[in-house]
Length: 205
Ligand SMILES: *[C@@H]1O[C@H](CO)[C@@H](O)[C@H](O)[C@H]1NC(C)=O
Ligand SMILES: *[C@@H]1O[C@H](CO)[C@@H](O)[C@H](O)[C@H]1NC(C)=O
Image (cartoon, rainbow, N blue to C red; front, side, top):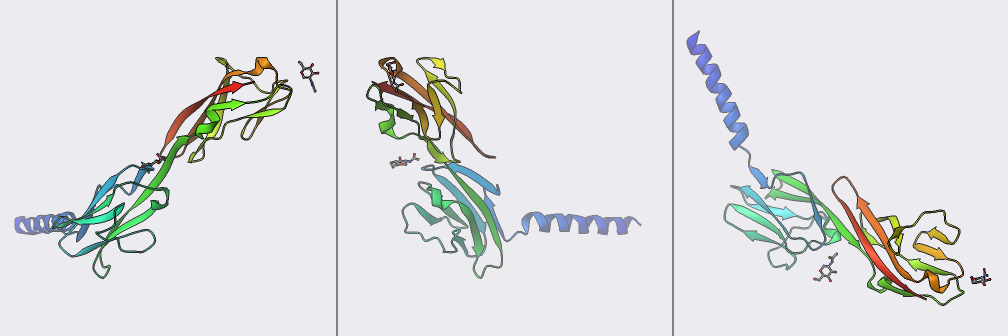
């Protein structure tokens, strides 16, 4: 009875040890999904006793000579190095042993922070005309304009004079009084990122 139990326990330990240390390949960090912004850097290690390769989302094997994304051989580990992440790096990156018998992957999600065209900071309009005060946030996930301020006060819509349009605010029949500082605020949100940024606009009439 005692012997039987000991054999059972030994078998259990053997199974646990096999599952824990018997993996032919592993990656670190071992997070299945990693989120970064454009221009970030990142490194992932692939550990195995066998020869390994890193495969890009498009199926190509990553080489050691490329600048932006390359592999570095660290003995028992093959590092995948992103010097500067770009939007088209998104997708599934896989480390696999020669012949592809064992593999581990992670998904890279790439976001682009909200930015505004530089030229939109200073805008001008002639008196008496209709004019759109432009606010054109860029980014990924796509930014959404959430709020406008005019000379320090929140703008309310609908408004008899200011009409909210997709790329800004349309002012009808501009007068000198319409000049001043406008603030356009935009946010972006997804499962992995959320950010708010604003553009201060000077409108000269
Ligand atoms: C990334 O860096 C380059 C310069 O190295 C810069 O021109 C570009 O605006 C940056 N992009 C973002 C989204 O930060
Ligand atoms: C534009 O505004 C000026 C000054 O407030 C006014 O005299 C003029 O009639 C307006 N024009 C139109 C087309 O509404």
